[in-house]
Image (cartoon, rainbow, N blue to C red):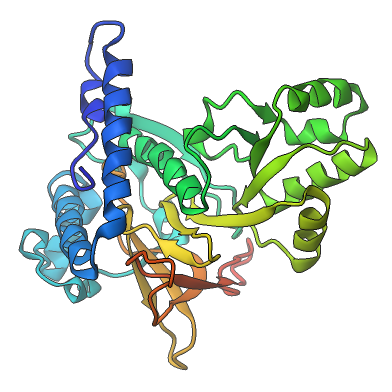
Length: 352
């Protein structure tokens, strides 16, 4: 189940009875959630086998159906169907956002995937290189299931209510009804509406970014609102120690983080011990170290976007794998992050 495509991804693109897509998605959600829960007991060897199979799958698909990767693999003599070891993919050149922008998008998209599975989106441009690309509906579906995995890792029940502030690029959260528009937090006209929204839930957790968490904190202080928040999950930016302490002191709850990119979905999520566990069912992660042997570039091959595969993609972050397994009991690798690659912001004049 962790390896194969969700059933509803393929069946949802053809004409079905009215309730069929909903039935298939619910079936998928239940079985995918069950599979991820069982993966808590996987060994390192289990994950190695799964990742090799998923690597062969996405690389073979790219070779057979995506013009850019077909040309490249032929040029370097790479045969993905014969992949037996992770080191073999190092033959494939690393590609970065700036490189992707130079390639016609038609050469990067799969010819055998229905157009109904393509979802046009874009990155935030935080590196100075905003990118327009296509999600695959199977990737969005997997990301929604990962949300349940994230809250399970930090000890929240699957039925937890979440207030979402911002996170517009998280397509898996689009159906969430308990939301506050970040710009409304600065609007005097919206105060009553927001208070009414918050009062409709006795307790809830929050998903947001550090910037919007800061705005929400100031809003609650300004209007003397003290919502009962169980836990806060942030992503997208670094949370500085001052804001962390202020939020913990005011809301009286723990704060956790997830780590991901718009292009490659979930990359890592914190457990209750605050260590970042990778998501090996979603991505194969490499740390390409610099000559000094310190933190290296985070390079990802994403398993779930068959519409527009991202292979050996430099996401612009620096990090390192931890040498020790987390004492929480999970066998997945943990990753430590050192922030953005300082050379990744390019100006119009060609300077970095």
